[in-house]
Length: 328
Ligand code: FAQ
Image 1 (tube, rainbow, N blue to C red):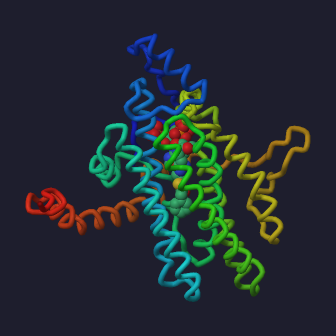
Image 2: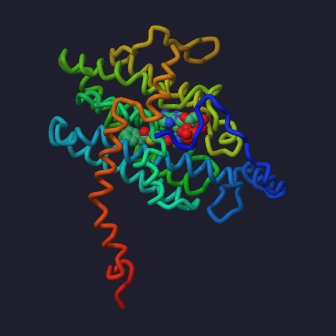
Image 3: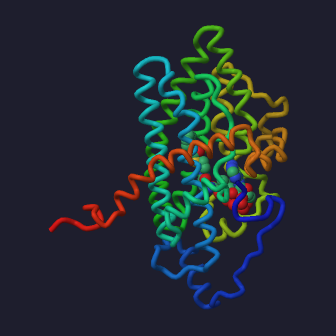
């Protein structure tokens, strides 16, 4: 499932040697002035390649991300929770569509992106390769995974590529509702019966390491951050986003009487930074390279969906289809 080649230990070569230096300078000046780059504007090949990689992975994450919570729709406790979860899952799939459209503006077709996902060539977020055993796991996703996603996406919605930043802007507005839904569910569990509190605690314990991984490898190990920050595609580094997440959500988790499974987690008053035990980055590498608890199952579900939907796509593309040959 590892796409793009290489490992998180290796810094990517910058690869700007073949670019016209005058055009490159103009492009970088526009970015420095905070202008948006639009699909028909000149851009270095590496900017295009990096954006396709990142937006495509993001789109795949939304679509695979619908799976762990999706399985809870029929089992969510009560009609209101079912309705809200169904709407949330539908939103996540909608986010994937927005993001695939944004990536298509850079020249890679949606079919090629889906092929790369189901054939294991493209990556998607590590976190969706873990199982949601209980309703509390689904709640941990709705609150904390959405929280992490918003930290990242809110920053990047101010980024330089117009179609991506506009898609993120809309996505963040919808994610804000998901966050409220997730927080409400977690409060309910954490203030419920002894068994509910225990379920919620176990879920937080299970999801903590994948959540720490979610923001990407530490900056010193990240191979793409340098160029992406320079071109304002990433508006914060992986470590900066991780710190912001800890700052915003650790106090809220503690407030609910829940414990985080890291004895070293504390805010250093002098530096203002959170200190924590480094999560196991070997586990992260295994999971993003296809060897996580549920990678095979997640991709199998997508392959089945792709196969079952083929007749619809073929019908739409058939010469007899009104979509291809509009009626006079
Ligand atoms: N998972 O050099 P860096 C959501 C890979 S949306 C898997 O630091 P970069 C909504 C990385 O691709 C969640 N792989 O990479 C929702 C690269 O591999 P490559 C998704 C990861 O790009 C909520 C290699 O490691 N959000 O959750 C991960 O500068 C609830 C080296 O890493 C986005 O995609 C990871 N966590 O920074 C849905 C946001 N981290 O390509 C349902 C946009 C790193 O060379 C329910 N993306 N890798 O083979 C980004 O901001 C960035 O791409 C990062 C990674 C921050 C994810």
